[in-house]
Each structure stands twice: as structure tokens, then as C-alpha cells.
Image 1 (cartoon, rainbow, N blue to C red):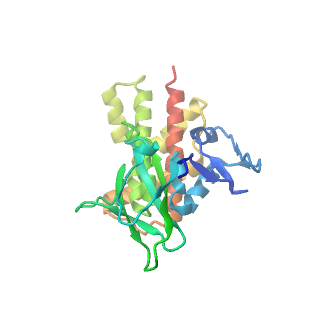
Image 2: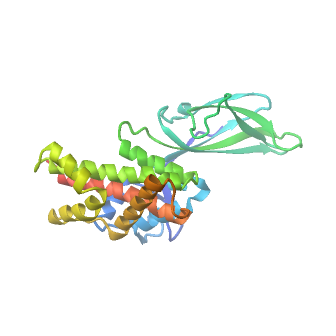
Image 3: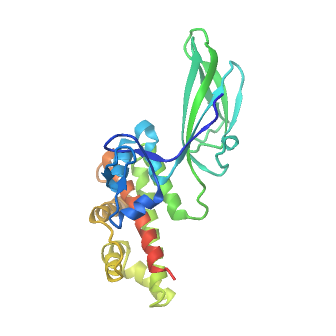
Length: 302
């Protein structure tokens, strides 16, 4: 069997379709006006357009995860009729506490019918979680004779454990919901990721000017999230001569806030959320989150 193949997060170049490796600094550099060059066609690329395009396309239902730095692992296993397989992803280098986002099985054989690997679960299957350990049972596909040298190629996509970084975990949850086609379910975690990060930013920044109690009262009762995003943030960053949040990102974050309020107040959206808009929203949440981390570091640097 071939050795497992580690696949770093990548997105296709919109010009030549060759793979571009995703790096966190590309998103951060975007706010200073920097562009990314494709090493294949050497064209200059707008990183927002690159990431948004890959999220909207979501090729093979897992490409959108590359935007958050998800890695993939490809490997093969032999299959034998009637023989159960104990698959443990940590044996292939994936951390046991990693968040598994996507798995794909592609059976193969040398002539004849391949064997389909069926996942074996207990009496109460957990369908929203991919565990680190899976039991597979090979079953024939169709009624023809089973081929020789049967096996399965497996692709699994994952992100590392994020510890107590709950804001980032909400970004991951939002992308997971998008990847599963649950577009409405992405709204609240995506909004929470940005709103909580912005709130912490101002709590840390304003402590130089007021008491903790006054700051919390001000942010909760007067300068709520919308005011923080649309008034306080541009005021502070402009005064401090820091990069500005692009209007198109701010606009999508405001739209995300409106949808979150619809869910919170009415329990539903006024109209269905289409895949295209859902892509814009989580892209803005990701860029907004990275931007706020950048501003936090610059405002609170020693």
C-alpha cells in the first residue's frame, strides 16, 4: 500500500486553476492592501476574491474548509469480504483531539465488483460527529463477482483542536454547517465569532480609560455590537492610523447581524438563505475575525 499523503489547505487559482496553499498571513496582509501571486501563472490575486470563490464553489463538498486552514490526509486500505476493519485516524498522524470535518470513501478493485466499506455504529448513531475511531465492514457492490485486490481510498479533512479559543471554534462550526449545506445553522456561530472578538477587543482597549464595570455597562447598554462595528471600530482605527475594515466586509457583517436578530427574535428568517449568500457571510466572518485579531494585536502591543 502507498504511504499516506498529507494535503495542506489549498484553493484553486481563479486564473489557472492550479492549487494555492492557504496561509493565515494572506488574509491578514489583505487588510494592508497586499496581493498574493500565483507561483504557477504569476498573476496578482485579490485574496478576498480567491477565498470567496473557493467557498462558493466548494468543490467535492470539502474545499471550503481550506479557507480555515483545514488539512487533509489521503490513504488506502485493503478490503477483504467478511473481514471487519478497525480504522483509527490517529494511527495515520491525525491528532486524536482533532476536529474531523469531512470523510470520503472511494472503493476500488482489480476487475469485478469492488467492496463498499460500511460504517458500523451502535444502537444510537451520532450523525453530526465524525469520531477518531471507525469500524468498517466490506460489502459487495451489486450482484457481480467480487474483484481481486479490493480496497478503499480514504480522504479525511480536519482542523487541529483549538483549546479554549471559543471564537475560533465558532468560525469552525459555521464552516462545518456551510459544508453540510445547513446554511441557516451557520448564522449564529459566525456572528458570535465576530461579535465576541470585537467585544473583547474594546474591553481590553478601554480599560485604560474607565473601570471594568463602566466599560461593560457601556458596551452592553449604549455601544452595542452594531455601534461597535460601524462607529467605534472605524473611529479608533482611523485615529490610531491602523488598517480599515473594507466596506464590503463590514456590509456582510451587518447583514449577518440582521439575520442573527431575525433568528433570535422570530425564530426563523424572512426568506430562505441561498448558498451564494451563505458563502459571502462566512467569508466575511472569517475575514472580520482575522481583521479584529490584527487590530487587537496592534492596539494592545507593548
